[in-house]
Length: 202
Image 1: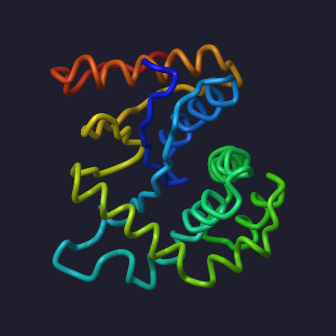
Image 2: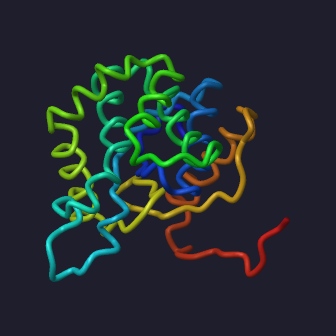
C-alpha cells in the first residue's frame, strides 16, 4: 500500500476488538506510517434496540454510553494533537482498568492522564455538538456502506469488519505490517468475504 493511503476506521471505546485494532493503528502511525486515517465514531447501542422503536441516540438509558465517544470526538476535532494519547487512554480505562466509561470521573481521569484538559473537553460534550456530529458520522457510514460494528475499515468504497486477536504492544514494525496486510486484503482481494479460524490460538 502507498504511504499516503487514506482510509477510515470506526470505533467505540467499549469494544475489545476496536481497542486491539486502534492500538495497531496508533502504534503504526507513531512508528512513521504515513497513512491519512479518519477515525469515525460508531455507537454500538444502535445495534441492540428495537428497530421499530426510538433510536438509541434518543433513549435516556442509552445516552450515558455515549460519554466517552463524545469526549473522543471533541479531542479529535478540537485538540487533534492530543487525540492519539486520549484515544489510547480511553480504551485503556475500559479494557485495562476495567472502569465504567459512563462515569464522568472515569472519563475525566482518562483525559487528564493523556494530557488533556478534562474540564474543557467535558464542557464541549455538554454543549451538545459532539453527539450530533457522532450521530451524523455514524449514520453516514451505515447509509453508505451498511456498517454494523467496530472496528470497520473503510477504504475504496468498501467497508470491512476486522477482528485482530492480539495487541501490538508497542511493536511499530508489527503494527504497520499488520495494518498494511489488512488494507491489502481489502483492496486486492475483495473476493474474500470471511476468513475465520475455528479455534483461537492461546
